[in-house]
Image (cartoon, rainbow, N blue to C red):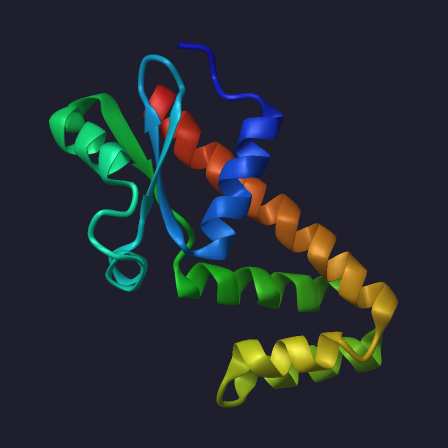
Length: 143
């Protein structure tokens, strides 16, 4: 099986980022299979995407789940980004302070939204990190 292309990696990243679906990839064909998370399945109804769920149940060994990032991993890449901002020392200090308080994710994003240029840098950094994360998971699956 050919390793998934960059567009597929981007799509997987977006799906994982939304948190609505679990993403599975067929080990031979590279076909993606999307299954709602249990929480979303409860909300959407038990017959939602029934065919896809049946396909996974019947052929589970042929699919590998591409898992998203853990909260601690997201926290770490937020910290790395803040440390990277040495050219904006005041903003860097605010971001690191935001991460040290209660509700660090919310605080971090609140600080980011004060500076449009840095906010865009964050979105670019976050996207690249998430895609690298997905690429590593795929390398493990297809190794």
